Length: 446
Ligand code: 5AD
Ligand code: SF4
Image 1 (cartoon, protein in one colour):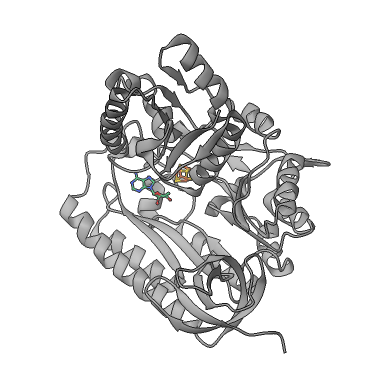
Image 2 (spheres, helix red, strand yellow; image 1 turned 180 degrees about the vertical axis):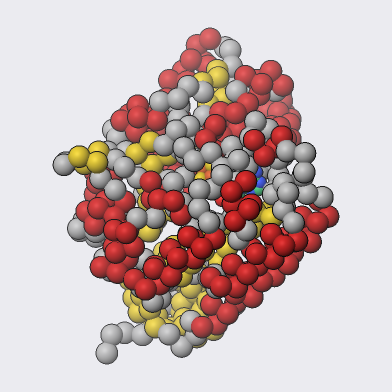
């Protein structure tokens, strides 16, 4: 019987991958996707727990869905509500206690069992909460369900979890310890994607460069995995995120110099430019260590574009500490970066500290940092005008004949594309810079 599912995805790319895989496991049960939560038979909120009020936002969304569910019940129609992802993992039975309309709660490590959980819900008439941890079993199970591959660029999770315990972060508690998938499993998934027309793969992990999956001859690492993936026919581009400075190995840096399929883009969060704050964050690296990595990356590939994450207003952060962050940003010259105000996450060590920074101060610092980053992004984009580089054509643009692709540096490029097709990797010369994208023109090889 045909049914519809609506999945709302919050947070990081790993959640985007998980949502894709939920669609894959639901398809054999007759579920097709709908954009409309109001008419869906099953609504899944795939949630993120990383920043403040995440859980509260989920509860208010659940309040809206409860009303939709009641209205549908009046018309004799059923609707199931599921909470997945990190809020599901962290809150567990608290969700079904507070929200009687919720049918299913499960975490990032249990969504492969969705068909079974739905069946259990139907048979018992009770809500089902499943938040056990077994990443290994999840990936083994998922192997039998290939990714549907709806685009020429796909995500592929290779590693999950975190053992680093930065003092501000909930990830080690919601996603668990670091786990790496075996090499054969990843190669298998990538080969299937390539057969479906995927040309670019982004390898995902909370600490993707800590990848240590089992290979043919013992433990592998990210550099070796990238090199193996680059031999798969059809795979033209490889990316990875997010990395940790502590796990940036020499051979990964070398892979950027040697492997042309590995894109010259590095998302490397630093969080702060102050060594005092980095220490309090338990980051395990200094600002100098971070800058050294960037320098080595740029020596390996001169066109390397750098991205990062920052937190302003970590407990105890002084004006001087914040100035050190601005100095680091000036030194790196980012192509893009994300920045956030520190928010207390219950259960994390930094949340217990008495020296929390005033909200007004945090806001002022965030504005200053974001202004500096925006200037750098604009400068980076303008520096691309007149340059020609390979762009992977990913989807149609809004206007007829227009296509949207991505540069090696992850910029979105609009192209007037007569005779061009999605999936092609073509030379594009950048003509102009818009607020959120660049425009370019097809430049055939001479
Ligand atoms: N407060 C603010 N930002 C946070 N991040 C993680 N935890 C917090 C927190 N408690 C940010 C970090 C991380 C990104 C994914 O989210 O910058 O790299
Ligand atoms: Fe969180 Fe730090 Fe682990 Fe990243 S490295 S997931 S910020 S604890």
